Image 1 (cartoon, rainbow, N blue to C red):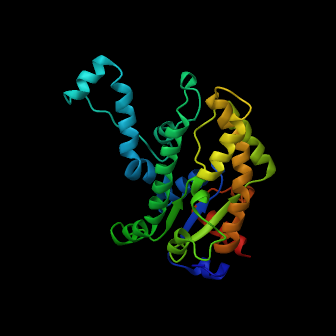
Image 2: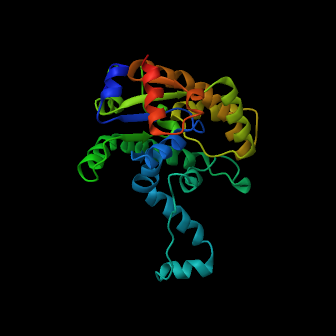
Image 3: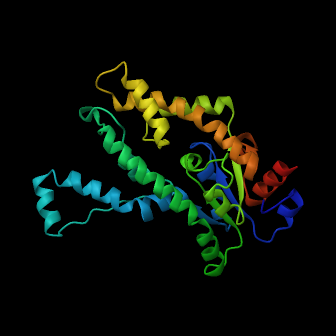
Length: 279
């Protein structure tokens, strides 16, 4: 690891960390607090939604607008501009583009279209993760930042193989920063499921796992309610991801329980929490 001990971490003049874990456990909140304290905040989801998926997202907006004769004419004449207003805290354009498989009459998209978008996201995820060392260099060289926080997406776990002899994503990242897994409790998992059930959102799956879920779900059903499928698959996805998160932390990083972050108020608190995790 970049920092082998708590003492190495505490004495390091440049602190560089990659937070990973389930969506909803506070990665972006912690990153935002550190950003306000003078850290450079690199959001993988934001990079995905702007650099690698931005054109796909906007093209989808335009395709919907072209269904309206009035807007179609304005688009053809370059009289209007359609863009994606994605931010660190609002990733809705990316989620909306990924969509949900199922009955189009209920807001779903065809499964083959869903698979195509999932494949696009996988490539974008890998590319955005691979860009991290470049942004570490830019943050220090151009802007003078000493400290760097990489705010990963919840689905980063799907593009990393902790059992591989040499996983290309992690081999590229670990010389430059410390991977930190934010580990939730059973209560947090239950809260995430409850929150998701109220507003199911598009998700990213490994393709083989997604096909397995889709086959199982559709074997006993006709037309698929997109929200029902996404909700049904969400708990399965959490169960699928948990051991992968743990394996990544065990091999390449450290683990911080989410409860340790609940009273975090400053960058100094964060530094102490990481040191405690080493200890």
